Image (cartoon, rainbow, N blue to C red; front, side, top):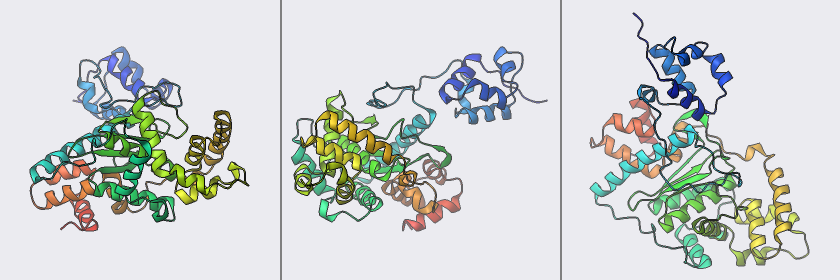
Length: 382
């Protein structure tokens, strides 16, 4: 006898709503859905599992009496181009929850191992001077303008490595966990910071352009310096209403493109628009950030800035190849997605027997023990 599962109509409707799939699309994929909604039929376990996968909903939720509350666990500073914040997608929520689980493991590990709290956490306030604080951050991250690598990818790599050296778990990924079919949308969010004294986490949406990821990483690190968790869509043209977001934006911009050095680099005999590419290359920044810094230096008024920004944004979005790829060598990309600092600690504890293989595989999104062992070799964990 085939087992069928009785599910409340409200749960079906909630799952459809959170998935952003059109009802017509679900009707086509699940011809019996209308009967399920009416209560005249019920799905089999396998059918319910397929519906859960299609709507990106944990299957266990369909056994509840009513839809669960899915609150964002950090302060949400997103503006989504000033159009208001929509309900968070399952992709965003799952990414936040994955990061929280990794953070909790690393926090417990750090305390048991007797590690010291991360010194940069909460070491600044919104009253801290922008130029001096940005200078301190550049020094801490070894990100001086003349010492930056020759490519955006190299600059992002160095920033990530040096932030982890300071004690921050940096996760850069354009997908949910290891599921390459669930790509993260940079239009929904660009990054978040989960601040903790022992395990501060910074997540950067790897589906964004390399240059944009650098700005986001610096913005989220500014949140760590403040000791304030946040979810945001940081971008250089925004005018946030919250003091914290304004401060983090200014810190990221000044860290990336120091005002004094920018003024010295700008040529007075050329239009700003003709210098954007060369200036962006010098500072390993996006042309959009450079434009914002030119505006900050009072070399453009707001109207001029907005006109140039919109034109440059349209041009930049035409270069699809600027966006990162989450393909390639799994053993090289996975430590970037999960934080190499986190992965090394977890693998070391697992191979020593203090953490179970099942826990490690769950936290790393790995299904085979052989894959875990190979990843440990790649990271030099024995």
